[in-house]
Image 1 (spheres, one colour):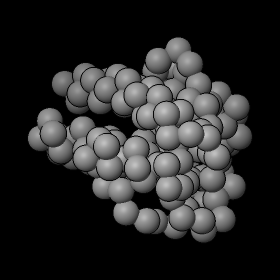
Image 2: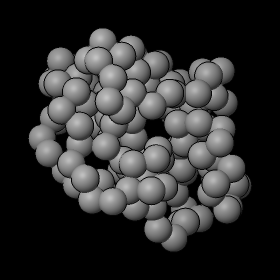
Image 3: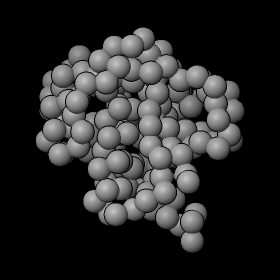
Image 4: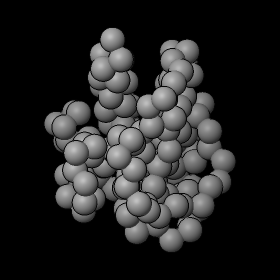
Length: 142
């Protein structure tokens, strides 16, 4: 079992979208053995944003409410994927932490408070990175 945790600031936009989009992609590919979840460095129990829910619905991914969850103790058996290089630097044990920049050459910027169009662009970038990540995991397993 491979565990992947997406990490952003508040766990209301990027990381929860990444979690749910990756679950959808894995399901579509009938790919098993990967547990996916998300956390926020400064999460405070807020619900997923409305534009994140609308965006997930467009991709036919789970779009229901969920309270944000703060990143706790780092598990050495989990791969942590941060939205930015800066966030990667905030996590102590960097052996099992990568960023989207290492996957697709750019950070995933925070869409919080912005238009649905910005959220859709964020989702496109997330899917690009998640696709690279899934291929890397597939290659690690072989």
